[in-house]
Image 1 (cartoon, rainbow, N blue to C red):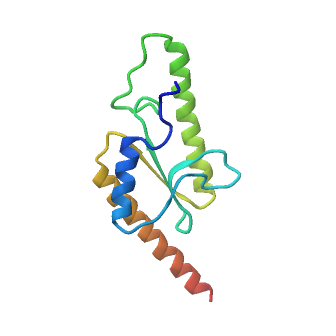
Image 2: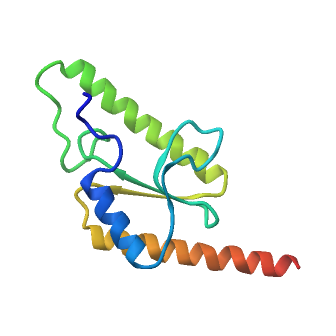
Length: 135
């Protein structure tokens, strides 16, 4: 279990590089909400966008998850708990006004980075127009 990375996985790093190359800056492995004891892989605080790059095995990908043969009860419960926590995290962030983007590790990194960049830029524009209307 110690050898399993919880952050800085290859899919994460590739997406981060592509997003950074588009001129966007972000926080890595940060808490979107201070009182939420969960971290997102990329956090764009002013735009309120949280990005998660989920591993197919650990988060129960519908395409690639295969139940383990040994100690299946324990591992199946662990993955089910991860999935439930993911849904709870999404609900809490959405309730706080955040946009949550989730990607599977097998998705094309360039497509993910484009969607992230589009969402962040759109949110920045929306939030700046709201601030402009308040004045």
